Image 1: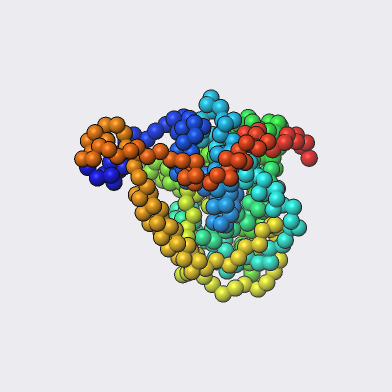
Image 2: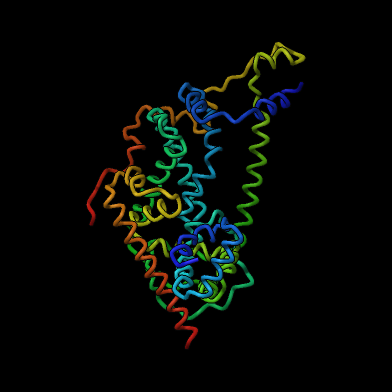
Amino acid sequence: MSAIAVKLRSRSQAVRPDEELIAEVLGGETAAFAELATRYRGQVERLCQRFFSDREIVRDLSQESFIRAFAGLPKYRAEMPFGGWLRAIVANVCYDELRRRQRRPEELVADFGASEHAWMQLVNDATPEDIVEAAEQRREAHDLAHKLLDSLRPEDRMVMVLKETEGLSVSEIADLMGWSEAKVKIRAFRARQIMKKQAERILSARRARIAR
Amino acid sequence: MNCFEARKEFVSFWRRTMPEIQRVQFNTHLRECARCDRSFRIFALTAPALHSETEPETVEAAHRTAAPPHRPSVIRTPVRREPSSDTPWRAMTMALTMAAAAAIVVYLSIPARVTFEDALALENPAIDPVSYTVADNIFGQELFDQDLNVQQSVYDGPAANDSLE
């Protein structure tokens, strides 16, 4: 039996649980972390993509998250699933990046691109089914969504993403971010109000433009 | 379907996880209720970032139109966006494909960890089991040194600052 066949056979065996891999890493078998990283890479990148549309930034933040996870593994407590623990790390990495970017002076977006205007028009006029289908194919839909979300403060955006996308409860978000539940509720309310106001303004501007 | 039920289902409709019968009811309600229809369109503006599972690679060229007159936007953002183009995405896709191919070649060239049973089954049972050394880890030796100096618990999150502002 060739060495490659042996290797493929051993690799095709049942997926090893996270706890086993973590124990191997802590025991010095650091290659096991590569398997953990491969297993969770998609999840980590998807969460980063909720905050940033730039692929380079998503890749950098994902890498940073895994580096922090590797460095912090000795502190990992088995009572919490590894995926949940890693998500907390990713959320904090993204939050730090949002705050870092927020320190720069705000810039007015000079203009929406032509493709973004076309997308806004489609959202105004098309049927809900057509909107959903078009959003899957149009990059500008994601770009515009990120522009809207960029207008939120980092804390508001964190709460919005963790609540709306990750489905976390108020208490889970409070634990994850180290905030009080009251703060999380206020942030969630404020984020929804701001998003609604911005979106109304865009859609109303589109309708007024068409009516002229 | 009433308004409360319809608005609760925006996400499942967007992600296409709604059963067909319910989907029909949802569409019917949105046709009949202007307020819910408006709410859905507002939802649709942020849904691609918040609720879509994948991001499209390219801008749909067929829908590009002439640039509108310059005017300041109502949206303020700290991040300036570059105009998108197909070429960087294609180059990136090719680069990723080549990197994946290279990784597969490297992966298969790494000696297999041979168990005792496998060693017995091999024609040459004198093969030594291979163990991975510290230097082989994907992050390099430096991270081990840093690990000893980690001060802050990444699990604890940012310093608590409960001001409601």
